[in-house]
Image 1 (cartoon, rainbow over the protein chains, first blue to last red):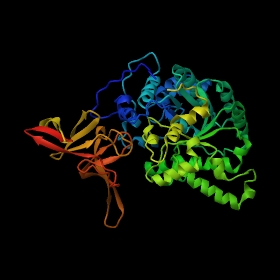
Image 2 (image 1 turned 90 degrees about the vertical axis):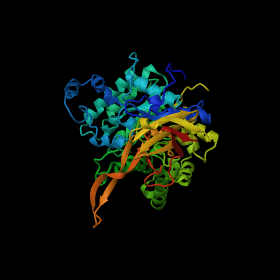
Image 3 (image 1 turned 120 degrees about the vertical axis):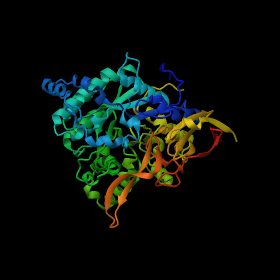
Image 4 (image 1 turned 180 degrees about the vertical axis):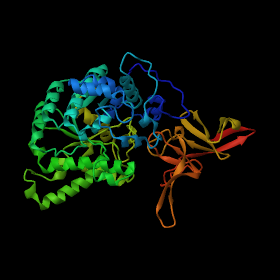
Length: 403
Length: 121
C-alpha cells in the first residue's frame, strides 16, 4: 500500500538511535522481494509505540482534575519514570547496554508535522515489513497492572485509551488496537468497553498480564460477558516484572525476562482453563500475546496430566485442558527456534495453521520480522499465509483487499 | 570470483568499517588489530544487518581460583560485532558466536594491493 513515503535510501555504515526505521528494516524489505512474499496479506498482531514520549499529551486526557494536576506537576521532576506511571527502572536493560539501538530510542528525523510523530514511525515500520494491518499497543503502560494505586491505573487507562483513539488511530485505518482494560476496577472496564467497543479502530480489548489478580474471579465475569456479547476478542498481553518474589532471585535481565514473560501467562492460562472459562464463554475469542510458543507444549501436557487425576477439582471441564488451549489464539513472538523439531511439535499442538497469529513486537529488542514465519522449514505455503495474515483477518474481521 | 573494490587502506582506522553493496550482496569490511576481515551483512539469526551494528569488546566474567565470581570485565583480546536487530554477537576475527559455534557469519577474503582494499567474492 502506498503511504506516500520515499523509498530509495543509502546504506548507513552504522545503525544508531538516529537511523531511519526503513534503513533498520531494509534487509527485511529486500528479503520479502527476493523470496516473493511481499504481496502477501500480513497482519502484525503486536507492535508498540512509545506513549511515554507523548506523556504530556496523555495526562491532558485525564478527567480527574487532581490526578491531572499531579500528572502535570510530575513532568518537571528529574529522574525516574514519567509521573503517575509505574514504569520499572529495570526496563532500561532491554537494549542490552545500547547494543540494540531501536530498543534504546527511535530518534530518527520526522519532517512531516501534519500527523503525530508516532503515526509516521508506525507507517515506516509497516511499509518496511510489508504489513497490511498492525495491532498497536503502548509500551511502559503495560506495567500498569502492578500499579500500587488501582484508581490511578484505571484513570490512566481511560486517558491513554481516549488519547490513542483520538490522536493516533484515526489517521491510518491500517492501524488498530486492542484497548487496555484496568481489571482492578471492573466498572471502569465496562465503561471503557461501552465507550470504545464500536470504534472501528478498536479490534478488541487487552488485559496486561503482569498483575496479581485471579482472572476467573467473579468480579471480572461481567467484563468477559460484555465482550462475548459484543463479539469482541480478549487478549492477555504478557510482560515482565522484577518485583515478583520469584523474579527477585533472577539478578540478570536475561533471566528475569526469559521467565517473567511466560510465568504471568502460565498463571492466568491455568486459572482460565481449570476454572472452565472456555465453557462459560465459548464464543469469546481469547488471544495470548508475547510469551513465545515453547511454554504451550509444556503447559498442555502438565495440565492434562493433573486434570486426568483430579477431575473433581475442575468440574466444568468437558475435555482436556490441552483441547481448550488449542481452541484459543496465540501470537508467535518471540518465537523459539533453537530446536526446530520442538518448534514444529508445538505448532502441531496449538493447531498453528488456524490459531497462530504473526506478531512483530516492533520496535522491541526481540522483535520478529515476517520472514521469521516465512522461513520455517516445516510449514507449507497456505500455513504461512494463514499465520502471517489470514488467521488475523478472520479473527478480527479485518477488511483487507486481496493483493 | 570477482574482486570488489572497497577503498584505500589508509581510510580505515583501527576498528573502522566500510559496508559496501554489490548488486544484492552487502558486505561489511572491518580493520581490527592491523588486519582486514569481511563478512556478509546478514545475521545467521533472522537475517539482520549485522555488519551495521556496534563494535564492542567481548564481555568476560572473572572467576577466581576458588571458583567465586569477581565480576565482569571487557576482554583485552576479543572484539565483537553486535547485530543491531537482536544483539547476536560475533568475534570480528573469526565470525563466530561466543557460545554457539554453529552460528557463524559468512566470511570473505580480503586483499590489499598497492594500498587498495578488495573483497574477493
